[in-house]
Amino acid sequence: MTTPSAHHATGTGTGTDIDTGIDTGTDGDIEAITRVVAAVEASQQAKDPDAFLALFHPDALWTTAHGKILIGLDAISEFTRKVLPAASWDGTVSYRVTHVQFLRPDVAAVKVSQVYRTPDGEGDEGVPLYVMTKQEDGRWLLTACQNTQVHKG
Image 1: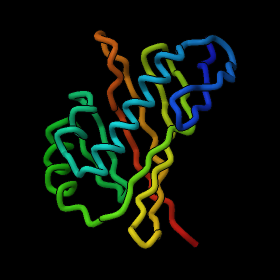
Image 2: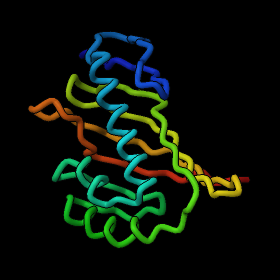
Image 3: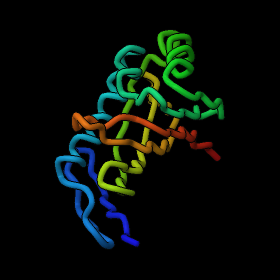
Image 4: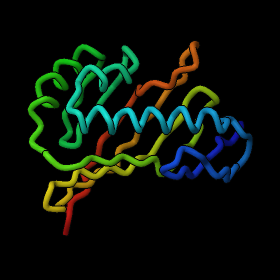
């Protein structure tokens, strides 16, 4: 059995390898994964469902921060098209990759820190886990995702 490779990634898209066994990911993969997370951020900031949905594998599984389970791109699309354009935030959104662990060369578990901040500085935080898969064309897609809201207090 091989041990997956783990990388702590910074917000810049570069990773510091803390290899615990076999290196199954490349710096290019880390950068590509970080670009997907940046695209999630941009699509959320713009409240753009099409840009957001383009990041998903057709058979994706998505669990929202409030526990709603969505299976397949059709279900994710129906939900996203209803809630994203009507989202109530008017401040800033930030997503930052905090850890990437390659389970296989084409499968990565990606921890993310997300903050939705209102214009007055108040913020809601989340810590999603994205399992991403590398496609034959080299693109990384969101495949199994769990969004977890951080409760204050």
